[in-house]
Image (cartoon, rainbow, N blue to C red):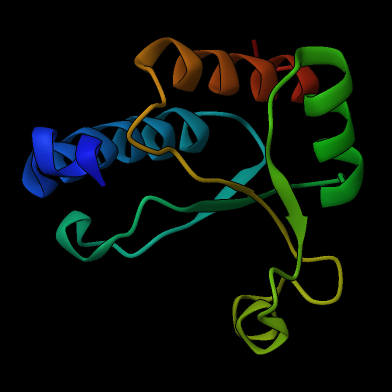
Amino acid sequence: MRYVLEQGVEKIRAHERALTDRLIAGLRALRGVTVYAHPDPARRAAVVSFTVEGWEPADLGAILDQSFGIACRTGLHCAPDAARTIGAFPAGTVRFCPGCFTTEDEVEAAIEAVGRIVGAG
């Protein structure tokens, strides 16, 4: 709480929004990557779900973790109906959640890692 009060919610939100916008743009630039995000940046949370053509989310997540040391979540994220709606059922998506302590370098590393995995970087 002390950190949030010292920094201010608006400053934290601006940081998370910038990271989220960069992550979405970077992932969308990669061949075969589909990002599921609201088109209006003001209505987005700091959550980026995506799939990669030809890859199971669980496999991609395991490689991100084991080979690159990048934390992510995979699967249905307790929202199977949402996955059905976007066409990602039953495997789900890979999800990154940049937060107030996430750095720009970490976002760039995540984009680069996905690019290397899919052969686009």
